Length: 337
Image: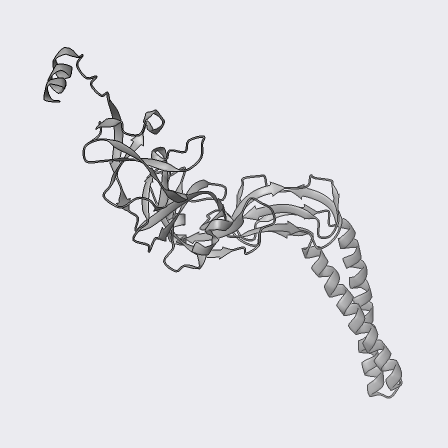
């Protein structure tokens, strides 16, 4: 037996040297928290569609889209001539009824008219006065004014157009926004009830600045399959100082605590999902040989991470790039530190 082994070793060809594949690797770490990112947008804190309370012909639209307006600023006017004619007519009736009522009071003092005639004159006076006051108020309503400082988001009518009472003329929004809205999938809704969940907002216009936000409200029903609307608030003072305005796009980060000690996170590139089925990672042994390790994955978090709920432990090393080029038992050389 010894001779046979020596013969084979001396007379045979040298054994083929195993190829060592270069790979990138990472050490698995336990996850204390998970960041989930969503696309969001700043929305107006205040927004309103403004309309005239009376019908009429538009005589002017005094603002344009994007224009800043102060509270009380004139936005649009109706032609006041028809209303003014009615004011003049009602004033004439009121003055006539007031004069008649004063006359009846004097006559009643001298018992020259009956109490019934006096009360009829009094009723006519009260009705005429009420009609006159109401018509004067309508004259004020021919001018549409801004209820708060804001920006004109849109105008809906043109000069000389005839409009009906309640028809939208102008929409204005608050110029600074401390409200951020985004849509959340159903699987993440449970985190909203957790008081440890935190939110951060990064606006595309200010990529180096991160705003902490608080949960303001969220819908418990969804009108379509896109998800559930969620509303956040950032500090008003910060929004004003930076100049956050409605329509600015942003990234919303929801940070959730992970209490299970066995939960770890790995890069998405470490996941090996062959056509035959299953989900795996390549675990690197101390001798540099890789072995296929089945894992159970959870949700994606951050920009390129995935939760591994079972199959890995903190401290183990795994391949993070080139997972589809490896075979069971391959020896690897780690390129990154």
